[in-house]
Image (cartoon, rainbow, N blue to C red; front, side, top):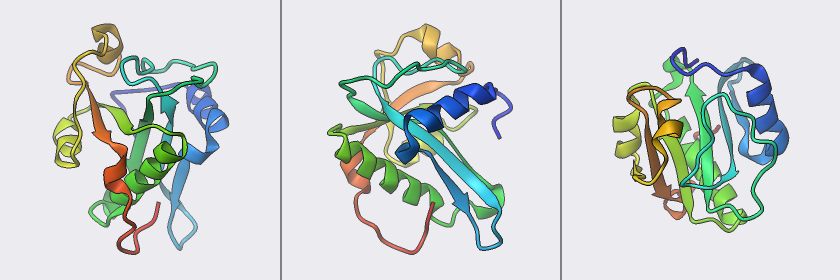
Length: 154
């Protein structure tokens, strides 16, 4: 789904194994998977570099890290991203963290800013550049996504 940010299958499998509650698929009535998200607790100032195994989750995370989200272009604009963010916010609160964090890449910075995310200046440049030249680490308070309005799902 993200040709500019390729990752090995074992990296994605590890995320699902380490944090099943943070990894979801969007399945439509036809039974086909039409989107996914991979997320986990982590340290905001040191997001994992692209295509890197984690080994284990931190004992004292300070954010819920959205590693990847992809939604079929035909389903965009239907509330699925907001539903995913509400799920991530709930997971963050369950784990006692107040922030959602991510690495905006492949031209997505404006989208994430529209959703209330702001740049994180203290992330090491070596990590940021692994996601591409336009990558930008971003964060948003987790509690803003707690209302479950609408019928959208993820």
